[in-house]
Image (cartoon, rainbow, N blue to C red; front, side, top):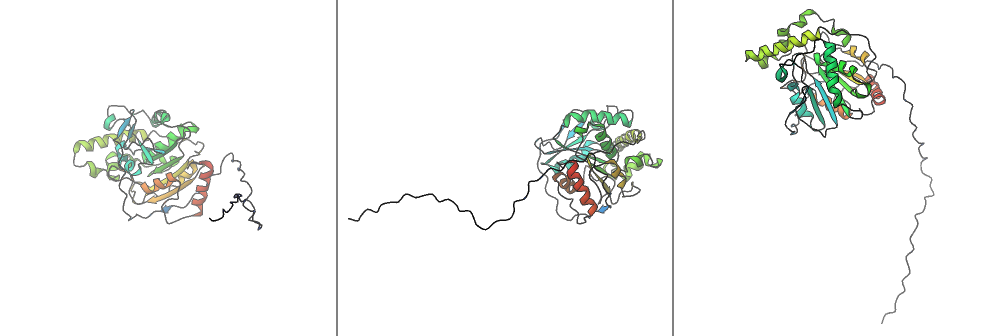
Length: 332
């Protein structure tokens, strides 16, 4: 018989502390006090973004479109989306212009497209008497869909760009959007300096390129012209008054082939924000987003996700502007 080998209880070992000293611990981070008001950022130079040849990603399936009250169309409802993008159409335009954009931005962003009166499904609803009344009414109906802590962004084209900016100003400070993107529009100070020829509805329909979409149906042509005339009459009542700049970041876009802008330099918008500012020239005409084109999807995705724009050109001014945006708008 083999002798029994006594077992020795195992003693847990204690890890030894290395004798070689490691790198010195970093000092704790100390929050930097927020300045009372950030200085106006340096206006970056106009940057041109070349047309992309990469294939467009397939749109994400979404729920059926729905109407929210009288004023909003949700072309691709996404209640779980992190961002609400409120879109403001051009003169004579309707909310349906943003359907391709809404589908392309889903599921991370939910588009709320403004349904102006006197057109489409609201053809019997009267347009407010002037631009100030329209601004006040839109601010009133949009406010319940905004909340402190909920990410909101405004995007407007042409007439809609001016309206988006003025509505952002009219809102209480805690409900204002973190970012306003204006496309195809001169700055508010320059708006009233346009020549009277710009107020011709038929010419505007042609210059926007939308005449080709409705030319086959005389009834559609007349409906389009009626909406344009209504909005141009309201636009003519706009009067710019000096005001404190928004804290929201602001991006100004121009189409490289826009026949309606005297210049693609939209640096005049920089004076209307004390947050980040940048301007870009994108491929396209006066309207970037239409019923048959989604518009600046890559740029909006880039801005909404907090990444740099998909543009091979960079500049110190742009970096400075984005650094300012981090201080002014931590969620952007």
